[in-house]
Image (tube, rainbow, N blue to C red; front, side):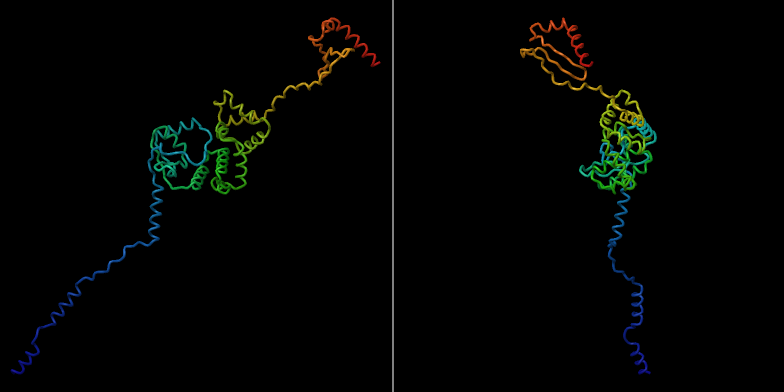
Length: 336
């Protein structure tokens, strides 16, 4: 029995580890596993896409700018100023505010200033009213500026043929190639050539005085180009601009006025007499000069200089009729 108890004691002697092992296992099972921190780097493509998206949002955002900080840029696309239309635009902006923003770019040479890309009439009206200008600001180089301005012009239905032709000529003078001009105006290359022929034929000061001439198409302008090739035609047109009624004419009427004046045939100047032959000196038997005789288209003239006539001039005057009759009789005998 004692041996048995001892055996049991042997079996039960020492600490009971089964409970500890179980508890340890439970502790390990309950303890959360901490994940290793991951790198917070965003893929390069995602960063670029995000930056591009932010840039687009900034470009499309409408800002309010002080109109005095916006300068003109690009090329002149409006010829003359329609005072009535500009007044209507000002009244609309004053009553309803600016609904359509203009497009500007940061000034390439003056930090803090801007250059207008399109929306010139709105800009001028807002400046006159002293109102801030709602604008989209975009980073554009000179090529992109021209393209944006040209495409805006193409979208407008009220830009006349001569305004587009002048726009093309200014781009050509500025060094832009013909494909760029074609793309900017959404026309083909043959049309670019026709527009340049008209646009280069008239300088900007001349076109500003005529204005946009909205009802005058390409054929009439081409006809005026040909008229200006005639001597004096351009001078006659410019003379018509100096008339007192010029300011009261519409742009279309101004074109018609200079067209009529250019095509008018100048009055023929009175034919000047042909230069007379060199006078011939008539001498006495002694060889003394007594008179000069000159023949010309209008007849024959005999001149007896009084200073050396010694009275012969007076005597000739007294007997001229008799002497002339005698000479005439002699002439008739030669015809018999």
